[in-house]
Image (cartoon, rainbow, N blue to C red):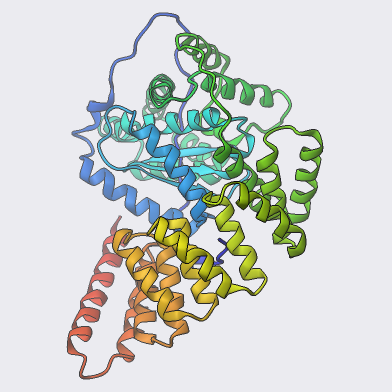
Amino acid sequence: MQLKSAFMTLCSAALTFGLLVGEPLKAQTNFTLPDLGTSALQALPLEKEQAIGEVMMMQIRGSSPVINDPVLDEYLTTIGRKLVANANDVRFPFSFFWINNPEINAFAFYGGHVGVHTGLIAQADNESQFASVLGHEIAHVTQRHLARRIQQQQDNSALTIAGMIAGILATVVAPDAGIAIISANQTQSAFSQLTHSRSAEQEADRIGMQTLNNAGFDARASSEFLTKLAAQIRYKYKPPAFLLTHPLPESRVSDVRLRAEQFPVRYLTPSLNFNLAKSRVLARYDNKPENAEALFRKLMREKNYDNTALKYGLAISLLDQKKLDEAQPILDELLQSDPKNLFYIDTKTDLLIAQEKADEAVKFLAELNNYRPNNQVITLNYANSALEAKQYELAENILKSFLLEKPDHSLGKQLLADTYKKQDKLAAYHEANADVLSQYGAYLKAADEIQKALNFVESTELVKQQRLKALLTQYRRLQKELARL
């Protein structure tokens, strides 16, 4: 599903952030680290940690190229939840999201939010390697490494919490800038922060590898991926972004290799969904369509990996170049082999809409929606197809039902706002716009939208007026609270 959103350019909020972590202890064959996670409980209660996480997620939506791609979201969330279900010390629900950035990077922060750059899956050789990085980031959250950093700050006030968080925020999209911010505070407390982080990084390696194994992945993939990154450093002036926030000295590589030997060799069948997700990223996010077409044709000649996934990537690159007649037979063949595959369903819908066959897309998705009701890939494609087919009432009903189950789904909210606009339901449109804007922390703009909504409410609609006025008050209050942070 392709949907360009005007809201992605809103809110000049603070930059997103990752973890500034340092060199671990020297590799040893038999040693254990203490469970450090509980030491942060007094400094930062779980409820406050979640609240801070939500505010920072708003900032990320407003200032970073977050991808609203239902089929990629579905894949990432499936892998993330599988890992979380096999992790210890999980204190709150996790959420996973994509950043459109070709750099190899991932980051975790307060409240269980984990961001993944598209470049990470593009460079991973298999699903276990990809999952190994997610397991590492999940461990940073479950062990409350950022919260422990605030605990350290309470013991030494020379390094301000605001300055520390600013540095952490900056490291995600501009790691060099983040390091410079921390370097500007080179006090003894800053050095103790980095020392603390060395232990935290090693702890995340250890716990993340155990989680990977518990979830049924190949735990040795952690060592494979770090070794691969270490090899890249030798040939690049600038190391991958992941290594600027997660430094990779030789001692850490050696330590992870030794730990990997403690796990049994696990031979796994290559994951089709991983390869499809990788092809989708390469075709739609990390390359221009014409370059992607050349890449997939080259890989298909060489047969570097799963040919099915390569065909899928080729189909997307052809579709995005409007070579519809070339894309159609490839997609039809893929769908015939696997009619319920969400990757194929999503791209087939894009093809039908591009062919101006929106009514056919609605029929195609109606049956699938009955089979898997409220699945985000099928349902949002169904609603979007109904919009394109000018079946506005159907689109509205689909989206209202979907948002009852997933009330915070950004793309669902944006599509509902578009639906109201198409129907000329202006009060509902401006209210829905306000709801979308609030997810970006743009409370002043959200309040303006509510004010506009009130202009389209009839004088007799007293209940609606009261509800909108209450929302107006709420958004203004939230703006004041946000300004105080």
